[in-house]
Length: 356
Ligand code: CP3
Image (cartoon, rainbow, N blue to C red):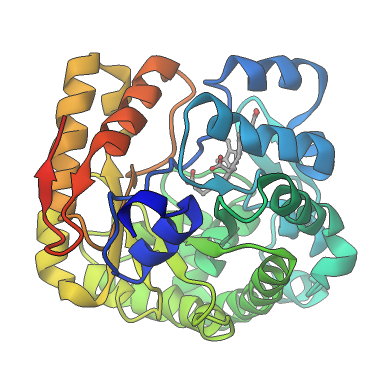
């Protein structure tokens, strides 16, 4: 091991808490507007067109691999893509995503389709297949989907929300309606992730970004059962599952009951504390504050080293605690990657023996 380990093996081994030469690193939202090459493409093509044109989606997926040297390539798409196929009109505006007619009645919930991903989103699967051909199996490909609660927030609110008033009023006035919606979303996402795995995804990440907005009890009612339902439907012996929640400190132990192999931690929770709380049964991903990348380079390097130490080497995937911000200087993103790539672990002990 050590010398010849492929990027693919490094990530898969880290997900399973097996020893590696160094922790793998990739960044949520590693493709996007902070990259000049992305901005140039986006000047000509809309975001949805990028997602729906495999040639372009492949190119954008590969940009951070070529420019930063990350250890994994995440499919370029969006968590809201399957929502269109369910029968909603989706727009990406300067103020973020919009669903023109929010879903708030049982009739509207019943009218939603549970699409066959092969028919409804062939471009997503084609992008994965082409990435696989392009990368030749040495670099892991990460597939992903939004989790039911997070997708429901967009469907019910009609876009990004601050207080989640519409979806919470449904949760506490018409829970049966919301559960029916979450159930339909769970079935849709299970099929969608299964299809991504079939197409060649090596690892999948389930984004329940807004599940941290729920109380611990409400998480147990509206988020956890649907995460579990999806994860249980996947071939986890072959393909590890990463679960991400932004603002997860109050529900970490419950996330650990989702069936996920890797828990992706936001920056508010100390990574060493997260490790103490979940023990050795899980790999952890994270958790540098994306805001740190807006600061001074020396500080970026210091925070990354602290994060690597707290991650403890084995069963740690270095990442941010949420997506990379569009204002991020590329040099700072590169500095983060560089620190991780130079970090060496003693394969036998799993402890870091050197950092430079
Ligand atoms: O990580 C990657 O590089 C892969 C691609 C990816 C995107 N979105 C591309 C994107 C992934 C994994 C996502 C996930 C996503 N999308 C989440 C979950 C994680 C998170 O960040 O919380 C959520 C909540 C969304 C919904 C979404 N999409 C929002 C709220 C926005 C608007 C905010 C913004 O950054 O513009 C988007 C648009 C979006 N998704 C962009 C990109 C690169 C920007 C589109 C553009 O070029 O204008």
